[in-house]
Image (cartoon, rainbow, N blue to C red):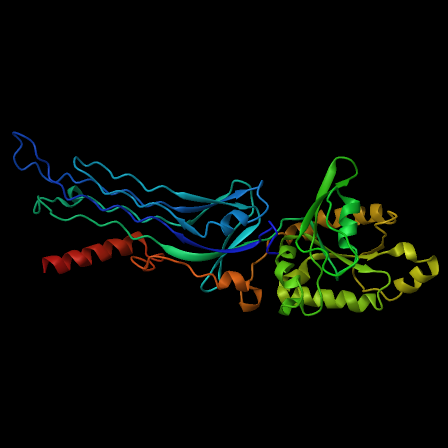
Length: 389
């Protein structure tokens, strides 16, 4: 994976901009004695914004830009002039990116549409100038609000491919061969385990003017949900698929047992995966005669649509497309499109990313993310009471 351009997990440090301080200026002009306060408001700090981009397919750019800092707002000036707002920093990410708190592992948000924008960190609000505080009993206030501090947070971005059908199977089950036969995708195909080292997407044409997206996931082995093999690294991509296509070769010793092992690994990773629509395809069926096929059909998992296929000869592929299309567009499947993201835990983290050490400035990095504007006003007036005794 070190040499691959496909990066689906990255940890970055984000910081919004500080709000500019309000001005304590007093109007000074010839023939205008006691001109009064005219200090302007400070500008707000820049926001950190996530934006979906359908032309991106990897988080690779963020691998080389670990710190994303917005600029601070400028202070207010004389004549009630407002300070300039800080510049927002927009982070473009692939569609299907989920965001988690790096400290707690809690789910924060996700980008599911092209052009969708989510304000990840809010810029600090600019402080009010002293002219706001002039009253009939206090005509010359010599104080103004400071700007709100910046918000700093380390986050984990996790890409989950948006596909209609996800291929699930053991290594060398024929997933890559099937994807190449049903679409124009050209995944690497070889006769050794874990040939597929990263997910691949292919667009499957269906009866002329229709199509759906199929995702080839690296092979899953027993214990993948506990970190064995490559499955744990890529099981996250199955979460966004509408239909799961289980692919088991016809020469398997026990097809039903293999299916149950695969299904159990998905449940261990995320229990909600058990609610997704499932289809079973018996690959390499060109080596079977009618008698063997009937014998295998007697001991298949119950309650799941099954089809015998061969990616080499094309046997059963049309029937498989019809079956997948019905499952994708079924009413039950449309209801299940939304899902709850599980929080990250120790098993689901990428070790080399978690060990990344941020070089950061420790000043002004108190967490004010939960403070409302009313809380900030109270904080300001508490400080003024201390100053005025």
